[in-house]
Amino acid sequence: MGRSRSWMMWLPWLAMIGVSVFEYGFGAAEATLQKQHGWTLAETFWILAIWNVFQSGIAFPAGRLREKGIVSAKSAMLTAAVLVFLAFFALGVSDNWIVNVLGYSVLGGTGAGLVYATCINMVGKWFPEKRGGKTGFVNGGFAYGALPFIFVFSYMFNAHNFAWIMGLIGLYMMLVVGVCGFLFRDPPKNWWPESVDPVRWASNPSRSLRKNPPAVRQFTPMEAIKTGQLPLMWLSLAIIGGVSLFGIGYQVPFAKSLGFGPFVAASSAGVLALVNGLGRGVVGWLSDQMGRKQALILVLLVEAVAQFGLIWSGKSHNEVLFIVFAFVAGFGGGAFYPMFAAMTPDYFGENNNASNYGLIYTAKLVGGLLGLGAASSVVTHIGYTGAYTVAGIIAALSAVIALFLRQPGRGGHVPASSPSRAESPANNPLAGRDRAEPA
Image 1: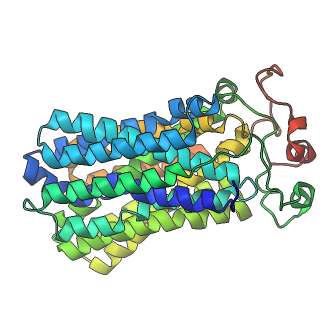
Image 2: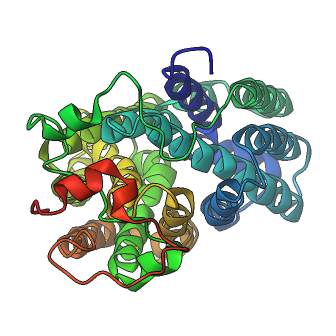
Image 3: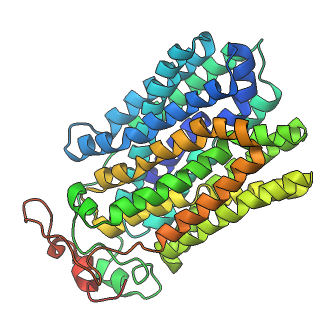
């Protein structure tokens, strides 16, 4: 590239910050959106739920096009820049629900999904020896980047400046995503940093290799599915993704329903978004030390406990504890994303990572429909206490499912594949070296 590879960490991080307002700022804007456009609670959150469908659903087709060389990282990002601007422009000028589904949900979701999939895949390619920490750091921008907008929506957002704020946010996103994307560059396939000796790196017991050994070979998407591990990862992510999205969307309305003022409501949502993002980097680094699976299970259990903590502190009307448990929920509600992103190449190899993780990430589609769309009916019928109780129970279920994750080929059967469709471990100097080590 003619410059340090650190550019391919900072640029994806900035782009992820740029589009974070779509998901993590929506809950704070919900009341004004309802009032301005005359929508019901269900109509408002179905806008975000359908957005989530397209944001997660674009990951697999975008990954396949990128791997086949049909779409470059730069063109994906520049396309996304235009789409995210159109989404907020439509939200600012039209109160028609269908128009905003097409604009915010379809165009905006597709644009944000292109940014997410491209950035996560990009940083993993440029930092193969530090995948957990770097992926977590970039992934975190997708959450805490919305922090200033949460307070803008809570204190400054009204009918008089509605269209202007929407338009300015759209312009801001277009510039950030467009400039970052213009400088994106993929490394060659199976690239390794020249400054890192792979043999010495592999033999260093302090590194993450012993806890996170490389994939035994390169799995195509169909082969990854046949191992049974990709569907298991998909199911676990679908469940916990719904819990996380429920917390993101309903944190502010829940706080207001308890009688907490706008500062506590905005602060709890802001803390959730901030820690949601920072926690991804921390857990990414932690997974390099203790293992991805162990870190994932820990995070899922933390998220389950946080749901009951929010109920208890809310019913006690303890504002300090409520913000503390929002902190805990934020930590658990985002850190699992980089774990699944980093586990995918660890389990199935690098060459088809964009497609394989794209398939796993589609689980968020189901999570969004349940945690955002269907959850509005749950809240209406059984209240926030019942809804948060359900969320805590199914978060624990996600942790139970994660217990059964096993790296394909280490102590188990690996589906056969032809050399034309999957690369031999001989093409990966680390895979063959480590093959006899326990997972």
